[in-house]
Length: 352
Image 1: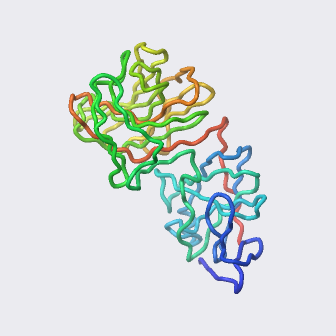
Image 2: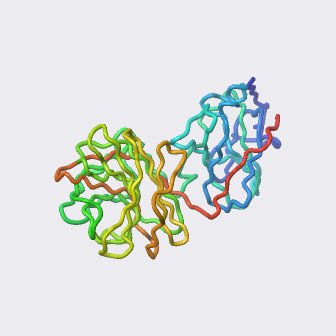
Image 3: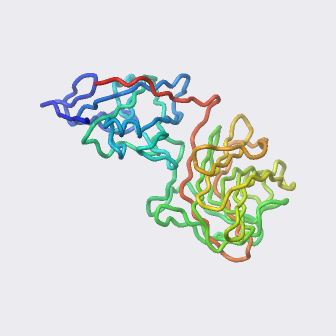
């Protein structure tokens, strides 16, 4: 069973006792808990460089069934034992995952200075865990607030394109606008975008649409050299279909300015949401898609664009009906990548 207690005059820190209010003053956020945990398990992250977000997959359902963890996951915490001692850092539940599952997935960032990582759990009164995605990812936008980050812009690209509005709405971005098409030698579209550099993975989840034409390109994720209509680009997009029919994923590329864009297709199914991903690594850009947000599949071959940093990345939309349509976006996430990507492994449980 979960247990808890406070030691008079100090705060329990697992490896000793510290006086004060419990503010750890450490990196990554979080505060020292006012109670002990019952369990911990080491996290092996061999070869993981600093400032990289890593994903830990574990069976939280097994811990809940054994009465070792809360079903809501509030007691599940990540600590690093490094130069500043034992410090709690932000951990973030993947948007396509959930607590009390056999494959719960959480993300955290490798901290500067090195150290050993641990997963702690078994604190009955735990609440408000540090879970700020901005302390984990290169960028994360879930449109939960009244507005999005000022680094984003919304623009029309090409002839007949109109960027009507891009507004947050109940935790989603509503992109309203029109465009003739994406492809051929020049694009006509709207684009919600910002600049990034280096090697990264960019994820987007498309939640829905309204008033879009049957051949509309419903967002996805795109990397461009510029906002010029004939710009080089690579992207994985979603091709709309008449009501009740399956949509199609498109790997689209224009590898030279002003040339015809090419595309490779994959079946996307009927139901929203749709998950799409671009991976930029060592000068090549790879397109991937997922039907569940967990398993991603390659579509087509990589694009080699030869672009100089920074590049422009974001969500494109082309209604293709001659009138305004609306695209709904759940979240946009970017993280630094290295090759090979580190895979955290949870070690043997320890009783505390």
